[in-house]
Image 1 (cartoon, rainbow, N blue to C red):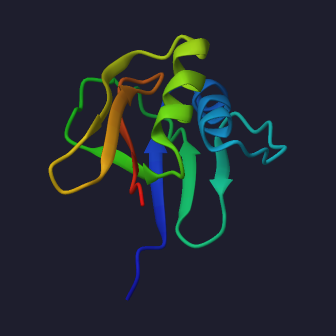
Image 2: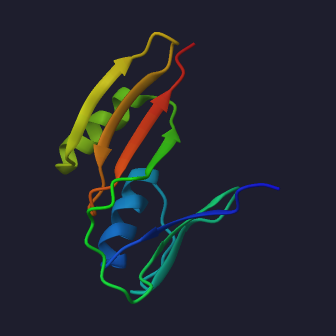
Length: 115
């Protein structure tokens, strides 16, 4: 068994999908206001509006991405005006991490493993 998909439920599919396309430097060329697949390789990342109203107060989940250079990503996000929680820091186990909020207030982590 393997994880097949991470789905982000939102009231605003366009705004969330645009954010994740920017973050992941990809273009799915979708304009659907109900469901968009952002990543379709390996584990899928989708943004979806299931018709129920979200209050964006559920802070019980976070999503993490491994990137080549956390510091580069930090500067891209700051330039875009993203709400940074923790700037890049090297952890005792060697990973370099940062965290921020996506447009719906979900916590997102980026990490890299410097050589």
